[in-house]
Length: 117
Image (tube, rainbow, N blue to C red):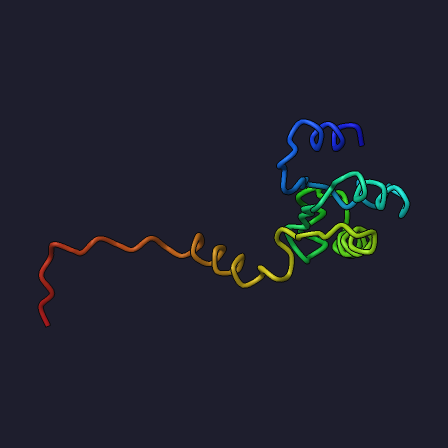
């Protein structure tokens, strides 16, 4: 909280204070602590499940399943601090397209041989 106060005191024209948070960080705080952070000037939280698939989250050692990320976002929002999610189900098509593109074979250069029918 002291950092948030120092930011506001030293940067009077500061428009927004945001930070990245893990679901475990948010869930470890009480609703009152989350409200106090908002009142102290925390405007926005970024949380990043990276995937809606719990198997993937475990494999990348995210520390929480997707349900915990959703609960954390809801609790922060209820305390008045909006959350923006990074990754997750909303970017599923983009991730799938990226995976497909990286797995697709590279195009072959044109052959110098002439095709004879």
